[in-house]
Length: 329
Ligand code: LMR
Image 1: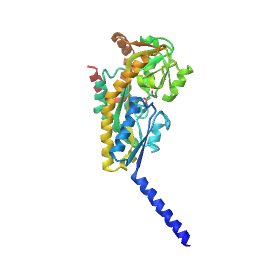
Image 2 (image 1 turned 60 degrees about the horizontal axis):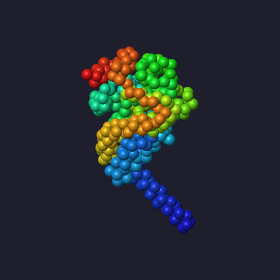
Image 3 (image 1 turned 90 degrees about the vertical axis):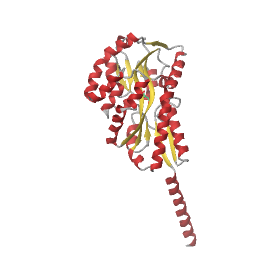
Image 4 (image 1 turned 90 degrees about the horizontal axis):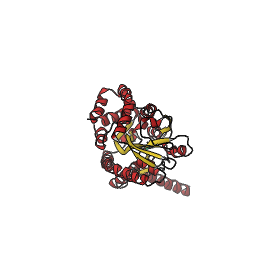
């Protein structure tokens, strides 16, 4: 009996220790799909180290990059169900669930980086983040990547007619689908990390993405042409599971918010530099011809795409659209 009592006692002791350990260290699983050397990849790591050091290790942020945990079609559901605590999907990936988010996919909506900032950090951004609450998701902020460019394996794309009958990989977004359709091309929705393979085997002729995604995932490898079109903007919504958020202490919430604010201002500046650097590296690829659109050529693309604005206005309403139109002045 004596021996039995002792081992019971020590088991209880061990158990209590573990319980305490669990309470002392909170873990945020942060899942995303891009490479480490990209704006989002670097921002996620930066945020993780700020939170860890400011909470003296009470909160650990485990960043899972390259879609190793969940791909772009799975991560939202994983967040909702609390299988991860944070994700930062491209805003386009939210447009089917939250139609108002389509406004951010409008081609040629953002004449400058300043315009993107005004939208993300102004009234439109606030409205869109609030939209997520109905699904138990808290939107923390927007993160920046950059303008999308077009690559393909068939011909230089300069004028709208050059898209004729090409097949493109896209994210799941009605506006992006409509954009290619207006240009005479067809599309397939494919996960980000399947894009390389689908370009390699020629299932799709091309894709649109930022220089940092094209370079870091070698999406140029089986492509002969790239057009610097800056026709659309790729950015992210940084999301946290609401139930997890509500369980945090006031102090921990404040640390997450201040670390996030700092990371957002970091990525706002560095995303531009990183995409410029990756564009320079893409220009060094001998098998890739890069064309820059002139103002007149951009206008030709815009004219071809104007009907999308009316369709989106019907979905998002006049007020949000007026703010987008105001950016054009
Ligand atoms: C894509 O699917 O092309 C991008 O959304 C990937 C990303 O997260 O930047």
